[in-house]
Length: 474
Image 1 (cartoon, rainbow, N blue to C red):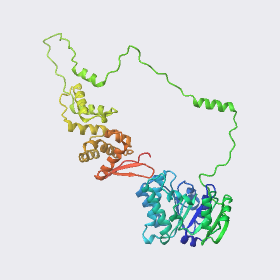
Image 2: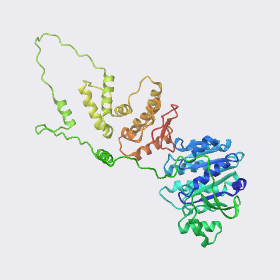
Image 3: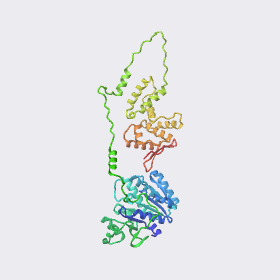
Image 4: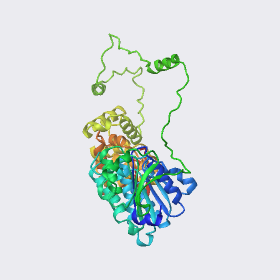
């Protein structure tokens, strides 16, 4: 294969699953590793084994967000590093978005970085589908545009596309049409065989031989390979994929009775007996009714033994600490945030009277703010960063204070970002979509910056504090 000619004319590899496409790509990459920069878009993580023997840098797409991927792609162009973009930790939409941003940044590099590079895209039908599938139209257009730029306009920028696909019918025509070199492997469907024969310049009656190709053998044509269709066998490789084709292995040698006992034990589920209330136990009463009864109840005090004994005044309770304790108790209840503020304020007044606090010193607006702070969780009042977060919370609507302070508390403590369920509970909703809209609102106000990597891990930064939460779990 003439590598200089390949850089100018691009390559298309087609073959059914198991025909040897990945083996062909691996052979080509190994043989040309010392000749040209290589950039591999790897949706299955098969080519990461090139790293040790050939010095490829492995980029885990799931560990970066969009901006991180773009920065890495710019460095790849600038430093001419051979890399493997491993996307096996992402779902299909995230793979397409990550690959599109990476390829677009390679394409948009400044002119002084237009060095020759071989860009290999395995399973190209995923990134340039011929028709809409399970992904959104936005993602499909973004990915298809990046692949089209690579194959149609990448040559002048030094980018030589090498794409491999299982079926030509699944690949967008404007992407496949730009390749001038072809390696066609085993194909069974009539429509795919006829299209492969057309690309190879073969007669329709000769298309049948494509069905009979053995694994690792391809029909090749193109200026970088041969001016006439030739049959080629792919040679041995030095590295292997992490996932290889499965072969038959012996079954475990064990008596049938052991398996029967194992399966029987696995299916047994211990059922706990149900404990029923005794017949004479009175039914439970609503907590609101109990509190009303407790408020109206005034126990009869015994008369003093000596009427002339002077009365001893009870000490005045610490109002502030008692109010904080009441708010903390209320915030610890699971469903407290789902109740209206007026109901919560009434409950707060009752609890204060139970603690012998006649005047807690909070009206309804002040109570809403103090309750939101309690929902966010305890924090050292002497912490300067927490005091600054409380100051920033005055710019937040009352119903969003608890969510904002929950994020600020996690950022100050270096904890992981609260998930949607925690934020929804703090806001008092069960809608995850509403929480995401509220985060968008807070981001537009400039109070927070939300980062989500391709692995779905979210972190939130608070610019005015100069802090950020740790990334949450995917």
